[in-house]
Length: 202
Image (cartoon, rainbow, N blue to C red; front, side):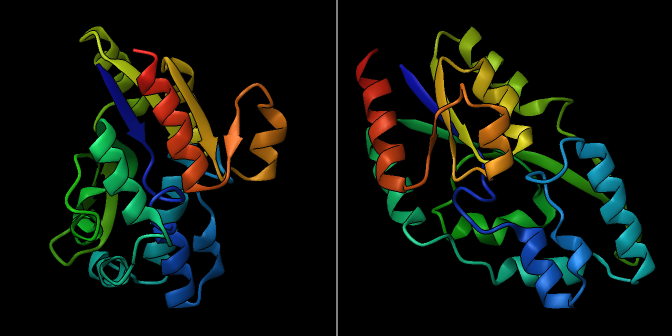
């Protein structure tokens, strides 16, 4: 049986932190896992920036709630679910992901959690587990599932490498250049075809 594991931001929906950066007019928030391989460094940077600008969780939630899936993403995901099972593995946060999941038909999402104070200030974060995407793929494989993984960022490389098949999706040039052995596609049609080929091999 085949299972597809997809990243969320940059694959199915726009990058939430980039949308937040544009909404609040602070370009430093545009830094994402496409730019920074060290997730802990990235999150410490974001939390410090939120504190310095006195921005809180409700500010992020308002922006996230207005985000729409990328053009073609909802149709792609619906076709994917007709073809096989799928799980979204993301380093986003459950506190602001729910409205976005509603727009995709509430797929299964495994993600992380923010730590906040009583007034909504973001004080930290909790990983679902360290290296969670790769370890989730390994766990699915241990259940005798054949796993295909796709994502666009540094934090997706582990799960793609662990999976039985996979590819990058609309990855930035630096990642394509540094990891030329990982195929990359740029359209939902091409991604679905790769998944169809993979699922048909089982």
